[in-house]
Amino acid sequence: METLRDILDGAAHGVFPPEDGRTTVVPQMSPRDAGILAFTAHSVVFTDEDPQWVYDTLRAVDCDALSASMNPRFLAALMERTGRTAETVDAMLVGSPLPGGPPALPLTEIEDRDHPRIRYALRRRHEVRAWSADGGVLVTGRGIGGRLEVSVEVDEPLRHRGLGRLLVTAARRLADEPVWAQVAPGNARSVRAFQAAGYVPVGAELLLTARR
Image 1 (cartoon, rainbow, N blue to C red):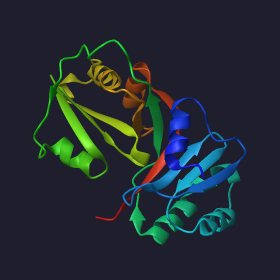
Image 2: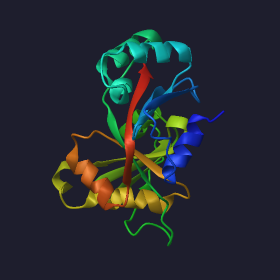
Image 3: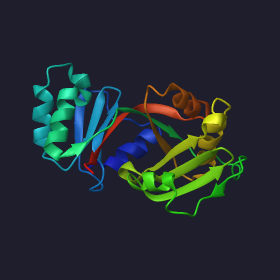
């Protein structure tokens, strides 16, 4: 049986689920992560709930079948069923590792596990590492399906100067595997920074998190 990680690894290399308008249900790979991935004309729901319940609930949603998995009615039912909550539907982007040595941007690894960005990342990822640059922070960690995910933060006075692009490019230099990013579509500045750094959009995702 294909796993969530199989699907993600395939997408990272340009091999996507069939564009057949259907939904695939796969088990969670960790108790922490459940949610939905939407690719072109195919969705993946990763949950430990009964797959038949997922299919029955999707059929009951009064909308185009292609968009049922991200329809608010289905999402509300899934959150109620799992006792989880969600924030926003994110664009899902991935960048391949870059050869050629260490990042050109000077980085200093942050060892303090109480650093605010590390504490925040640890709520959603494991194997978290973080680096500081002059005016920004780069964080990586293992998230959905064990994939390597990246997030960055740029100080307000240095925004609009390309530092975000340099930071997410540095993540590709530090990695020896595909690097994933979740970006709110409305955050156009971040979307542009990731695309300028060579990350490509592959779909949409909604992460369901345990209620705190």
